[in-house]
Image 1 (spheres, helix red, strand yellow):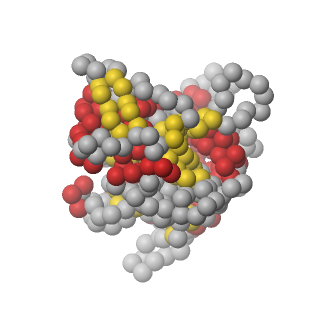
Image 2: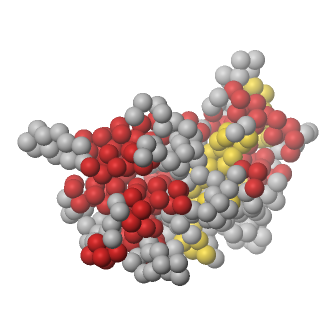
Image 3: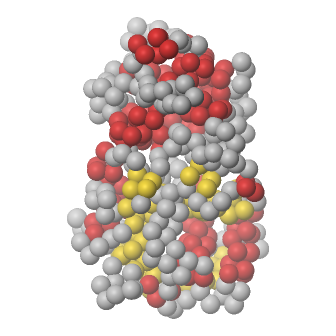
Length: 396
């Protein structure tokens, strides 16, 4: 974690907890170390005072939960251990548990794995082992939300980054994965309902509650971590050929580019998973709003991939009607929903880092290199890669 973010967290703690009644941080002179203290009302199963990156995140979140979001300090447990399936020296543990003290059941309401922002992307695999694995110990008594969390520092301000999974809707990782890994991203205030932000085409200063801009600052490392995720999910365990998967992935990127380019100012983007009453759109609906050939009032196709076909590929209505579009026989609806979930908050067309060499070209070249066997030693550049790069980099 960078010093600027640590200073911002310290300033936040001074603002919401000026007397240090809930949490105190004492950074070292060079900000590389220090100590952290939590109040006695918070139950610490394992006392950890070293102020490393993850502890900055925990300190920020604890202060926010207690001082701003209405959770009592006595409802919070830190570093709770759970039994393992075989004898080991150190038992697995979760960073934060927030208990529901509204009745005597004392059920786990929030089950949180906190991460240093610099490790957030690379350690998402812990969602399966830490959240779903350890969460099973709390599920029988009514676990509500599992949360993979960090706090980022964007445009000079602290910003939550969270994958919030409804444990009642998704009892297992396999069930969540089959649904396309849908998640909420705004923590519930005072035992209320977690919500999903809506990505809108607005400036930061115009954003309303529950609205977000697309992230325009995705760097090379994050892009290639995403590439690895997409590769592992889309190419893993399926019967589709490499070419089938690759072609559908390119189509999804084209739909994403079209959505960024043509969504009117002030309006929500189409390329995202929308939640209603805490429940996500099913994968079939997500595919439909990308792939539909239905015409809407202005004569345009309802599906944004179909619009991209007309706009970018200059296909006629007859050609579009005859084309297959996204092929759910080759790549499942749940995998399409997964791609939408992972891409929805990222801006491809306005990314500040797209000039880091040929970032997008390298992204797709890596997919080709890893996804195709190339058994005859052939190297090729798929025409859609070229088209994608031209559109994304606005070279047309």
